[in-house]
Length: 257
Image (cartoon, rainbow, N blue to C red):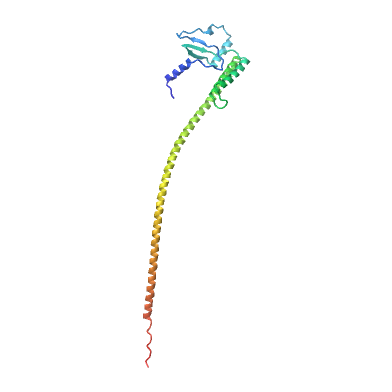
């Protein structure tokens, strides 16, 4: 399903109007930025007491790692920054328990590909990066590089998986189309084979009829030839006998007393 640029802007506006869901990343209380009439609300950070430059630098790093969340509710623009409060051992234990509770509550799969489990563990990793960054900014930035590398690797694997699935689907469609063509070709060849078998049977029948007819004619010719030979032999014997009777000398007559 494709969306136009106007539809995309509309969906982005809708998403900005929806309050953010509860996340495992710890945030400060929401801050009102602008009211319904467009007047900007007072910035609580401006009225807050000055903080050391190191804390401000840590907050800037945190905001660059985990950008603030913004949404619109009842015509008012709210913003929520990530918390810069250091985490204690109890916070880590609570984070683990909250992770287990959400995994069970949202029925995340324990094995295989599961978007819910991936989202919750990603939020947990972001919260750990937040906790580490507050104590050591350099360590937090290094963890940020690790997180981005993991996400980039996962995105590459996902792209590879999608391309392999698309390739498999194309090959499956081609094989199905080729299968249909081959089946039609097989049917055509079988029909041609049957036709050729019929022609062969016709030629065999004709050959058998010709052989039978020629055999009968040959027998008649042999019989006729044998009769002619016997006739000629009898004629020859008669002629020979006549010839011998003609050529034989006549016997002398008996003497008279």
